Image (tube, rainbow, N blue to C red):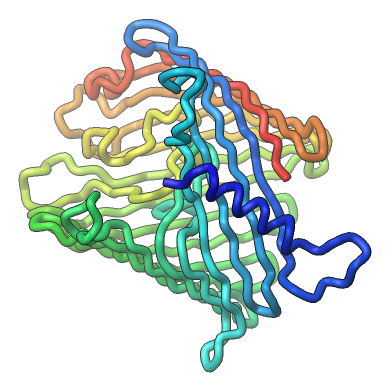
Length: 400
């Protein structure tokens, strides 16, 4: 946990080492960046009624270019709910933490590319398994190393992340994650990617799992297509893992490129017989669920939040941007389980998500949205939601 003096030191360094107006830069170049993002949220039902709260994310960062192919980034973050402090004179700064801190070294001898070492945001496979979701106020960051090697038509990336350390007070065992991905431009308007994610937890009944995936994307005229598949194998607790994800979408641009219509389908496998020694429920690991499975966040953690029965999501997504400063979106979802299990029906429910984003000033963006979720028999029997759920928010983001 960071203290206020730590933040002061970073800001002073950014000022002292930054380039002075009217003087040639002879030393490190420092860039200051940050964000202030309050968000008011209302949700119903919560404990039988409405719940209203405001949270706020504050970030301050320093990016340093020390010399050619050598730099660093340090970012401090505070995330809190308004009114959470015990008193208005609370000076503990207990919500202040280090979100990112990494070193970049480029042009590596012998292998080329760039290595990034330290705490950092990471995204793999369009954030299906490992992501840097921006919706959550705290975000998501990992401790580890990345090697990124551009190629003529794409890039190769290797990542090693430490999730748990047994010598720390917080954990009694180690856990880690390894990924390898290769992205390549196939031809004009067409791109492919293959990747592998190996996650492991070294406790006595832990996880040793490999996820192998691929993505194909193509754009031609007003049409865009995307196919994605992931297969998971290995061991989870005492069961063998055999799970999969299939995803497809097709987009048509309309209104001279100002709007789009997308048909979307995701299938995350489920397990209707968890006692047979085979775990067939697909795990989204550290993916960005809010980006894919509805803005109301009823399915942030699959398979836990669908009772191990997986998820099917058929969606119609509409987008319209009448100007560079304004965008309007409407997503319509139909959620079903992928496996039957003991539910009376695979129908989980339907959800409508509407939101708009407006760049009010060069550095200030306003975003507001509303979600309406109608529960089906599945959501009711899984005790996720009964009846109709309402979710609305208003958020401003000042970013520099």
